[in-house]
Length: 313
Image (cartoon, rainbow, N blue to C red; front, side, top):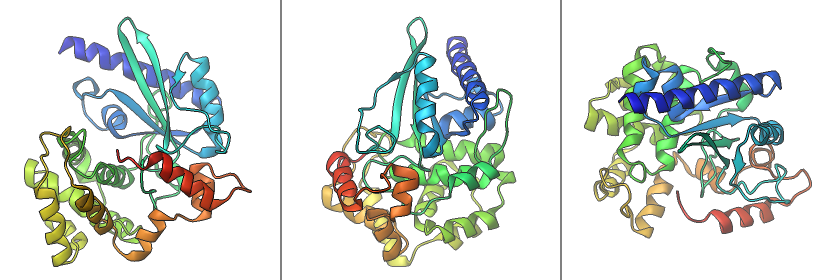
């Protein structure tokens, strides 16, 4: 336990240092998922296990962020792509880095410009980064910012759906939601959360992300919230049947047949319009979040994306 705590302290100290440098360079970023839970949610940071940091920032700041990380000794693991305005292959939705921070200990760090990094379908509907930054909490000591209460929960829910609720890291996805709700669930404005999920056409995604940990972990999710977000009866039965064939405790196993995986992902969308927006996102979304160049072809960009990232995460 002491060794694990020491390792996590090193990670958190690195986050402090990085955040201060980014703050000095006026590059705004938000720490997501495990790193954000450990830093700004869990009461004892070093008791919460995590292995990397996922950082959200505006796409216009990505090149400067890359320069800062390289100067700090990080190695970029993502391939170069001259056709993307960021200069990187963004088919995975993020740019990956790694740095040795102690003998035998390295830290992985992921920079992303969308709410959730995906390898297949785009995020579709998601909050604007400027709005997320405005609602974010912080800066905490060291300049660290995390998502606001409802935004944080929504991001965890959408992230779980990006992993289809069952695939690697499996139950850890639902433990993150459980920890979050047990630590700060009383601070979540559930009415605002329902309105947000409804407006973004994410009711089905969020419903499953909250229902699963409530059922298997007893997570404190108000029943009225689940009722408000629940899909239609037939749709709910089909989704439950597909999920029931997976193995949450064996995330490395193949969880879906190809046909059921496609059907499952189609049914996660609240309506046909939100599905279309995920498969063929607007030009504005591709420009602001994904690296489409101002004069670039949207069709060519999408073809290249699906050709590269057609594998699922």
